[in-house]
Length: 113
Length: 113
Image (cartoon, rainbow over all chains, first blue to last red; front, side):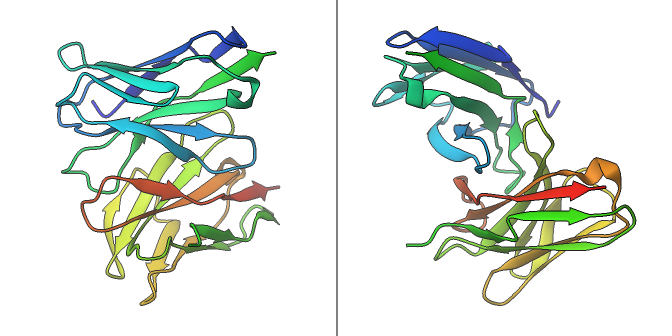
């Protein structure tokens, strides 16, 4: 019940295209859903996050869509750039688990110029 | 404002040895979490320290232990190293107990031979 399932495992997009990464969760106690971006040899960096009381959050080219009834959320990267090439992780956290973030398996995004 | 720092960057040990990894949280943060990230996987929660006590623990054996100092810095100790302990060890700091946003350090790459 603590799992977060992420898809696809890898994604190839042309420059200027839209990248879409999906996640699904089971634990209805989760109430905070961040996305992290990780470059090789680096730690994950917080990209954008959402709470289940809103269905969408946008920050620049990055948008999270959230479907509470389906227990799914997704990251959309508009106008994808080669510099966006990285591994993306969705994660989930509940107020009752305090410090424990549960991560998805990751998506390797490659943006071709 | 310094972010989360970790040392050392890389470490090579042999099976059966013991290792200590160090973390300094982001300025103003008093809570530290440790994660293990195997190659090609999402980070897995090891434990969290707050007020110098272990507050939350993931599914890791007792060979993994930690400590938090009065200045909020933290250590992760792993005893009797196994080949399977080879991973990137990440430290994340949080602004306070129950706060959701976690900031990750660059990690320590541990290789067990």
